[in-house]
Image (spheres, rainbow over the protein chains, first blue to last red):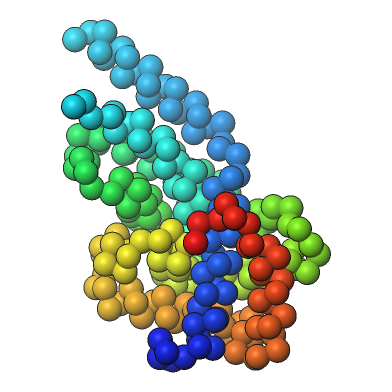
Length: 54
Length: 184
């Protein structure tokens, strides 16, 4: 393993991390599946129903 | 002072949770199943979440535990991969940048689960080594070692230790990642 003072290794690590952040950011911007949106609606409705009963 | 509803906070972490699910499973259908399970489990166990602690880490932990436990139940050592990860390619500013990013994603997909996970948690999501280690149930030293090994493997696959290759990829990367909106 290269030391942290190794400028070449630093450059490689920086390159990898920049790419990772870009990839992750792309994935975060992917459309949320309808199933998840629907699930949240159901869970919120259940919470409201429970609140109403209390 | 009133505390915000943690369920509202949960919703703000969903894009990151899905990105983590896709990078972990590399399969859209599996990632979405894992997401649903994790959201349901987190929502119904919200009373167990400690206010003031890191909710994103808590959600990621639930999802990864679900994923590995379902893999064990199915006795499946090899994941069913549909390239959901490398197929998720946004429009990039130039052709070279697109190719370099595709190379990177394809290389990333070849990493072992634990190495991919370590890089996503530490390199992309910005968790500390300590937090990432706790989420994965390993020692901090093990997490550091996984990140180093993952970087070494990517370096090998992408031949980044070749000076010329790194100069080329660096300029292409800057064309892609030079966006001011990108977290540093």
